[in-house]
Structure formats: C-alpha cells, structure tokens
Amino acid sequence: MPRAFKAAAIAAARAADDKKGESISVLDVRKSSPVVDYMLLVTALSKPHLEALERKIEDDLFALGLALHHRARPQTENWRVLDFGGLMVHLMSAEARALYALERLHDGAKEVAWRT
Image: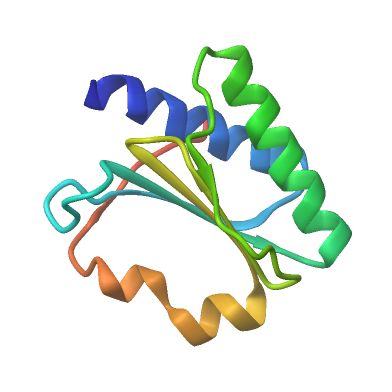
C-alpha cells in the first residue's frame, strides 16, 4: 500500500500546486512515523486560499478512489489537517508552519519529488 499512498501524496501536491499553494513538500515519513507513510505540507496565503486548497485536494484524491478518513476539528484559519490513512495533509498559514516546523519533527525524512 505505500506505493498507493506515494502516488496519492504526489497527486495531492500537484492539486495544491494547481491552486497556487506555496512551499509544497512531500515527505516520506515511514521511518519516523508509526501512523502515516507520507506527509504533505502546504503553505496557504489566506483563509479562502486554505479552503480552496482543502477542497481541491479532497476532490482530486476522491477521484483517485482515496476517501478522507478524518478531518481535524475544530477547523482554524491557520491550519487544516486531512487524514487519508497513509497520507496526512497539513495546510498551514506561513506563521503556523514556521511556529510548528513539522519538517523538524521528521528529521531525516526523505523528500519526495512531485513535479513532472
């Protein structure tokens, strides 16, 4: 199943790129996370941008046959988390991303190339 989640992570990154998400990063966190295989980090510029990214990623992954397992509640203007099983998507404002620095939690995680 990791290959399916890798493909989903790449598709989600491309969906975020289509909606002008910034600082898009796909990390292979299988060695550092007991919960997920891949993590997508995307910076959003505003609340409407965050919502557009969320809808686009969810729609594109649903079209690939991957259903959303869980959406973090409450939703905030700074951070949204979408759990697709082996793929966790974090959509964050620049401030939240700098503050929480999720990349550092998975130090040594391999970055996955997602651009064609």
